[in-house]
Length: 73
Image 1 (cartoon, rainbow, N blue to C red):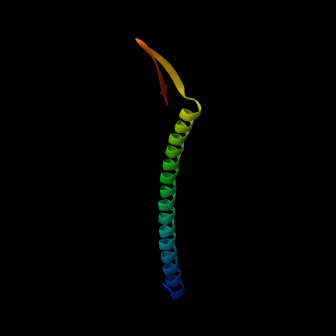
Image 2: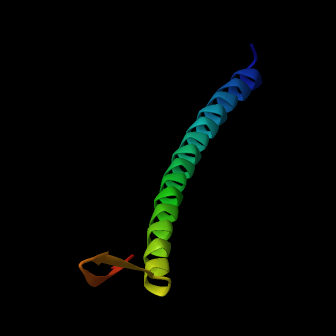
Image 3: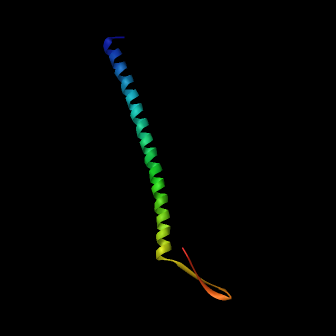
């Protein structure tokens, strides 16, 4: 093998290793972002339910000898 071929092989190996490392880091970052997105969606859903409870309360009257008023959120 000539020196040029050896150098080419060495460069290819180094580039392949660098690409694999970069792809691995990108996959990790994407996984973190997906987890953060899931948590944000869950928090948004929770806050939306709270807002709905405040702006659209359900009022039910119960009769047990006396009238009582219950407000459910």
